[in-house]
Length: 154
Image (cartoon, rainbow, N blue to C red; front, side):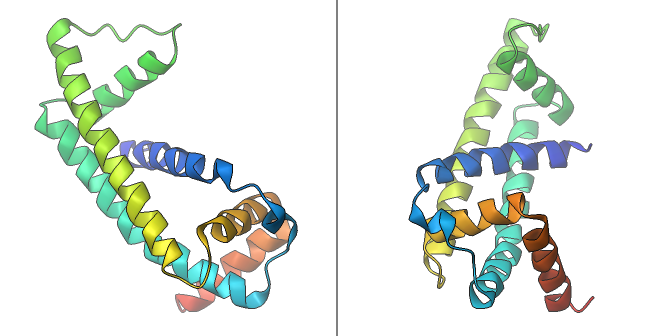
């Protein structure tokens, strides 16, 4: 798994926490084809926000003279008390500075994503509901994949 994919996963997990409060009656309503079309368009548009955030996170880490792989290793050790980052004081200062920048980039990306979704035909809560249903329903997942491929001319 590449470092960018790992950072993407971190970003996606952070974004997912926004939707934890979006649990309501909309979860039970299966999305219609029009909502799915809108969902697919939004997902495709959000990819550029995500890609820019990834690039910005890498730059932020590197600006603190820290290798991205090392940053991820320290971050894992911070999250898992069983792991030791084996980082000296200077390296931890660089990590902490980079981590602050990464957190701000992540927050900014989350805000952009939320605003982008809210400017669409779906509410943020409905987007989260559809996203959850797509993740949990293999048939819906397949339908969304087909719609994405069709919209990309594949």
